[in-house]
Length: 170
Image (cartoon, rainbow, N blue to C red; front, side, top):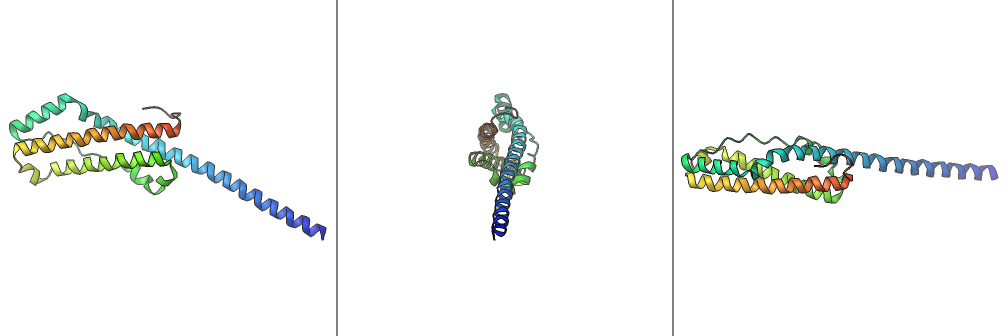
């Protein structure tokens, strides 16, 4: 009887230790995945941020507005890249900190608006607008870009805070 009781206690202790170790290892793996996602998102947002700096360059805005008013032509703007990293990690975004998710989702929502705005400015309907309407739309486009830049900075800061800024600052 004693041997059976010792065997049962041993089995229970073994199961508890195995499950406890599994929980610890799962938590460590989750933290590692969250860190990897945060690092990747920050890299993509920083890349976008470089392009968004154009929106706060007054020379660019002034020259563009002048060209639009003068001839109605909107300056060429390259297509904004698909957010490949964000699209890839979206199914796993729930494992990162809530404040990071909030800032990242706000940024990528604005980035999507910016991409849509740019597509609209390439449309035949936009091309048919009068110069003053094109200028007003371009001013709005610049505002959307400036907001995206601010949201990018916020997302980069929040990710940096979550990472403890140990993986490189802005």
